[in-house]
Image 1 (spheres, rainbow, N blue to C red):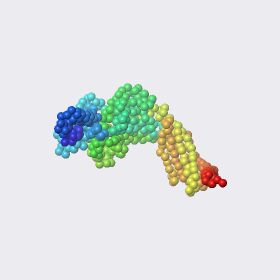
Image 2 (cartoon, rainbow, N blue to C red; image 1 turned 135 degrees about the horizontal axis):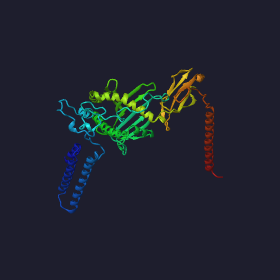
Image 3 (cartoon, rainbow, N blue to C red; image 1 turned 45 degrees about the vertical axis):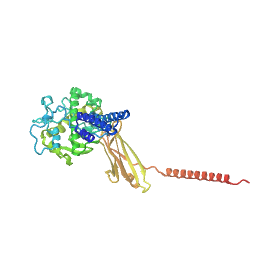
Image 4 (tube, one colour; image 1 turned 135 degrees about the vertical axis):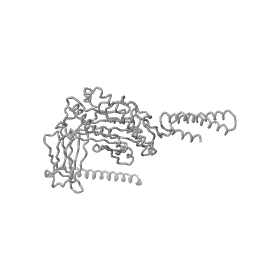
Length: 477
């Protein structure tokens, strides 16, 4: 009974009680052993003392692991209490009596959407904070639109579209040495900032981000502080979501993805969504200022976040104005790399299918920048999609991109097809003709001849060995 009581106690998160019960159980175990032998010989006393020491060491080890590391002796992680974000006191969460239909899940979400800062003057008053004091950490870029002499129009003609995106990930049980929380920022396809829970600092990843301090000397300090707040908040979101799925242990992830885009024609776009274990959990609709919950577990979050209209207005403003303003500024900082153009190199390869005699042609487009490219098959100068395959645009190690597309055709119509490529790095579009597949006759003949030679060698060797064995077995005259 004592052992069962101890195991139940470890779920209550009281380390002092764990230590006390460990000592009591170890003592009772040793006395029970002494009563069993009913003798007072020295070796039995020694055995009883050894049993007492062993019991104490085992239970104290369990208590130590439980209280200090949050794990059981068998590696199972116990439920941790919900830690509130930095600067938020539990007494400020509820200023009125709890309603009769109070639920613990809505209490957890209130930490994110209905908490009040204990000292509003201590926080920046800019950002998603309504008149009643509700608060949520801001995305990494500063809240003001950039100022200065930078160009305020769309991206330059040769640069196609540009995007600014942030990806934050929380991991419940990362491998040893890996961070619990990581944020990575991208301008186009280039990583330009990075933050993780090990370093706890937002750090530049490209040399051109040194220019940001000229615009705002406090840029790194402000955004480091904001990312620390985001880290705490999204750890809570992960814990909340785990309770929705009744998952108290195991590896789980929470992701926050948001960003904006400037098209070459001046159009603007933006997105914000959250995911759990690789699937969409909830998405922000900036046109209706509401959240979309594709799964039942997200509906409580949806109701709470929809009720915070001031914050939703801020997110819309951030995605459409603030984010795109900083995107223009970042592009101007890194224009030497972000606005460069590198033309693609187009190579063709082909083969003939043995089964039906059809030809498969592959058009590989490599070494181009920026990422946007228009590559397609044409037949008689018209786009052709039948019997075609296409690979996604992928990055190279040097910062450029590559892609491929293939088509299967009748050899008699080879001259009607072209690989058509348009890119900002090209003065004129490319139309590359299909190549005549190399004949495989020589390879086939070579394989046949090699097989025959090998077969003859094997037969000759076996014949030689058989004759030799027969000669040895023949009787002497």
